[in-house]
Image (cartoon, rainbow, N blue to C red; front, side, top):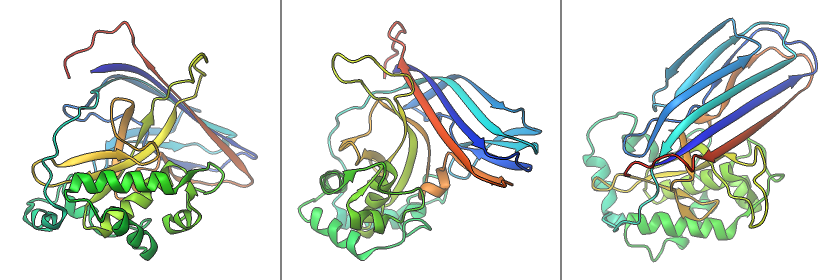
Length: 300
């Protein structure tokens, strides 16, 4: 396990004092057995909420709920945490042939949060799209196993898409981003999810944080890390869920800190809720993930 210090800040400024509101924050790193463990954390919200509580949603993501008083001109949430994260492992591919996956899905008993049944059909933000489906079938024509299918589709999307932070908004449909061949990690992930589902592979939206490294010879900049999104795919009964990052063309490893999973972005959006606002607003977030180089590493 590698030990990280995580600090994340979400900050909103309002042009005029707000009315009251209730906000839901999905920003807390998750405890995932054998993969990730949160050993310390602290959450501070300014101004102080009238009421604050926390709970886990259906998919297991930790939610911080805050009832905010009227008259706000700013809202700031600061999260600090110590997170242990297991590094990635290169393993053998024991996933079934893609043609056999449907039988394994049918045989899966249970409808809990990890059940593949929740993630095989279209969801509100990821409806079926003919262009994405056709692209995915062509990209994975030579793939035999489910894991090969995941890797080939991720690599094809990475090659076809250009990362462009100005090309899309949070509500841009995956079909529109794919048609333009431009977008951000949310777009890459939702396009890949739609493609996998079209191929019969259950796929979930994964939200979290990505640790980045500065270019050689450059100092690490404060706030340079980021909220990030990638894909979680169910590969059969034996190997279960695997995670792939199409933005960076890799299976997910020790630099990805998990917050939670859902059917699409709406299930794990970092900030949702209602706030009465008269006038404009602006928002920003900053993330720092620093490895504790002096910390002892426990066996992964």
